[in-house]
Image (cartoon, rainbow over all chains, first blue to last red; front, side, top):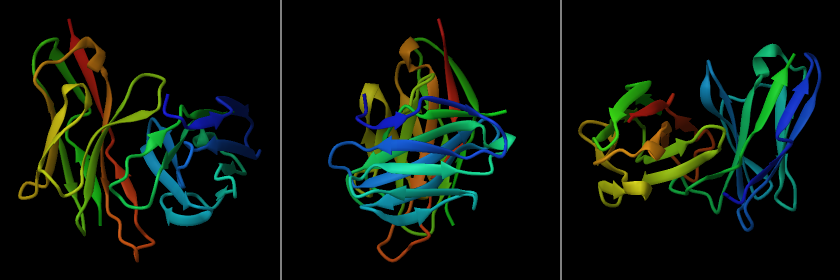
Amino acid sequence: DSGVTQTPKHLITATGQRVTLRCSPRSGDLSVYWYQQSLDQGLQFLIQYYNGEERAKGNILERFSAQQFPDLHSELNLSSLELGDSALYFCASSGDLGSYNEQFFGPGTRLTVL
Amino acid sequence: AQSVTQLDSHVSVSEGTPVLLRCNYSSSYSPSLFWYVQHPNKGLQLLLKYTSAATLVKGINGFEAEFKKSETSFHLTKPSAHMSDAAEYFCVVSDWSPMNRDDKIIFGKGTRLHILP
C-alpha cells in the first residue's frame, strides 16, 4: 500500500458528461501528479501541483483541469468527455520538488466513457 | 527536449535466467532516471532511481541499472528471473530546475516482461 488513495475506483459515464476524480496524497507529501494511462497512448503525465500551486504541465487537454486544496488533496476534473478519454487515471505524490524524488502511486481510477 | 525509448515492448525469459530491459533517453539538462514496475491491476512502484551519484544503481527485488552517459542508456538488469517479476516496466526521465516551469516527466511506453516456467 503506497499511502496514496484515489476515489472512485471505477467510473462509467456517457460522452459529453463531466466527472471529478479525487486523490489524497501520502501524509506529509506536498506534490501531487496526475497521469493518464491508455492502451494507445501509454502512460502520460498530465499535471503536477505543489502545495496548492500548479508546478508543471504535461499533455493535459483544455477540457481537463485540476486543483490542489489546502488540505493537499487534489481533484482532476474531466469535462465534455469523449470516448477516447476512457483510460486509467493515476495520481502520485512525492515529498518535495525535485526530479530526484520518488513518486508514490495510487491504485488508479478506471474511467469508461460510453 | 526529453525523450525515452524502451527498445522492446515485450521480453520473455525463462525463470532463473538473466533479465535485460533496455532504455535509451535524451535530455537537455542533467536528468534523473527511474525504473518503475506495474503489476496487473496495480499502481506503479519504484524499482530504482539514478540522480547523478553512483552510475550503478541497485534497486528492490534484485534489480539494478547502469547509467551510461556516453550511450545515453539506463538498462535494467536482474541476474535471475523469478515468476513474480512478470509485470510491465517503465523507464522514466525527468529534468527539473527551479526556473523551468515547462519541466515534463516522460515515461517510456513500457516493456512487458514474461517469465516462462
